[in-house]
Length: 407
Image (cartoon, rainbow, N blue to C red; front, side, top):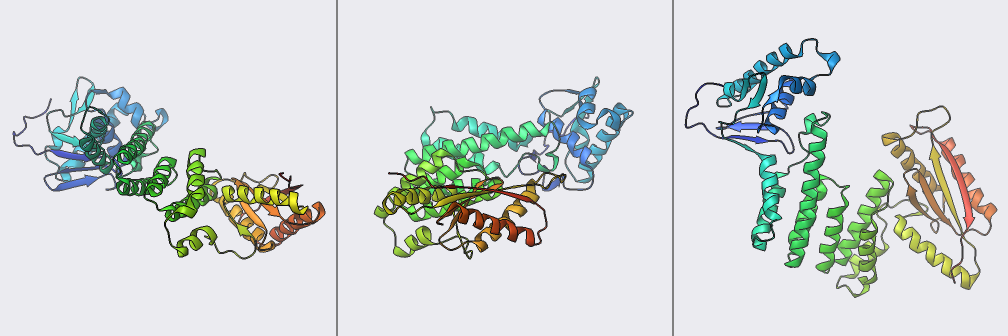
């Protein structure tokens, strides 16, 4: 079972959130050291499962596909030897005794004191969720938990099948803790603290909607309507540009509430001009806005049409890959959409409006006189796009309809 250990053995500190490191007595080693991925995969799996013995068959299945290794048991023995050597060379105390072999199984030593950040992270969240505790103590435990989450679980091993569900689990724990902590901070009126927590959470993953929602609510509660509207515009554009989706109904409801009360907010005129009148991207030609703004502008036009009798049209432009070419996705899709937006804005007048409708579509508000004129505008955009040279090829399809007046 291993050699006798010195009673003064120092604790080994292990981190897995944001990257794997192992430290002891001022010496440390990480999974970014050297081209020995399987060594780290072995050590990480044993540490995660350190409360039990792991059979050779289980480890072989984790480490190698059947066709990758003719003699997995012998390969595993050599890998354990290499792992012990890596830890020993790094100066990690009792390195030779950390991985133990016993009756056909391996395990991480239970005799050497260890601190693992994932276990501390879960423990603090459990303490935070204990409603019998004092609220201030719960807040402190939650803040400690969030500080431990430095990023994705074992990012350099993120493609390993056994890592993926744990990565999702810890990320979910983190963001649920963020929103639950913000709720508690709101109850105590600590809105500035909630803003700081959400800002950091958005750095961890800018596409998680929970922190955006709490951030807007915290700014609203502080009377910072201008800053809240500015952030909403940023987030809305980000989600449309990168994912082709709208923000949740709950976030849009907060936005509408802040917008409705904006005139009563205590702010300076310069902020009003910047948030309500300024364009984030100062493009020539058409006004480019998020879908929420587009929808409101459409409603204004529809109401005005009843009084003036003036007809406007909405147009839609969709993209797809040319026949026989690979489908457009990822970087290629985004590149095409960016190029198309430049063409649209450069082809329209300043009183025309354009917004991203989906991941591969734009919608336009065109105050023209006839349907033929609307299609002429769309044809001009298609022609100009075809004439320009772009990195990725795409086919454009268009459609147009008259705006329906609203009485």
